[in-house]
Image (cartoon, rainbow, N blue to C red):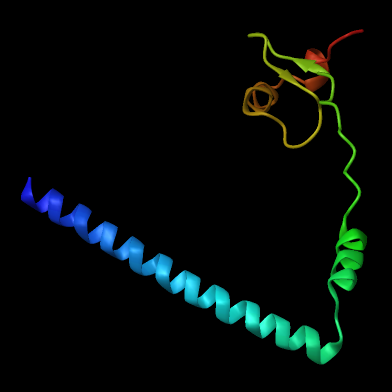
Length: 104
């Protein structure tokens, strides 16, 4: 039990150290950014303008493809991508995939 308490104390101590280092690095990084912004004449308005341009359009939402093949146990396959194992096994037995095509 003492080992657990010692480990928890060590974890707490290390987390405090990590937070202190993060705070120091944060301030240092902000200062470096400000120096570069000043050197290049970059303003917050410039950053907002770039931020607005960088936004990508949302990709269209695609609907799942309708099933085109149905196996003997109710498995389905849209016909896209790799042939599923259940159909590959049936084809290996000499059947054709068209035998399992879903008729509309």
